[in-house]
Length: 136
Image 1: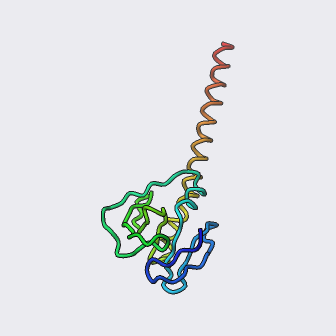
Image 2: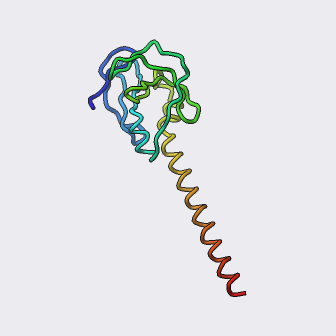
Image 3: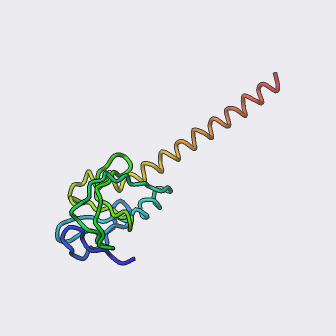
């Protein structure tokens, strides 16, 4: 898929790498476009956007359909194309918002890894207790 145009000012977006993820930044207004597939691949799961029923005044930089105001996992409000499955951050200069969106896959992956480790410890503990019971 080629680079999208800026949803805000229709400028061609430039590819950038942020937090190790591929995104597209507007050289004019600093808007940021991220394909959900990039975030999903990093997290190893599918993200569902929850539309708020509040249409945006912006159009998608890929398919030109109107963007929708939606909630990203973690309760982050943003503008999204429900067709192309991309998200647009108008104020990508707001580093905290970019960090929340782009950092979410890493946090979710770390939480899954921790949960698997806890499950592994439980299994080993149960096996050990079973062996102790057998030899009593």
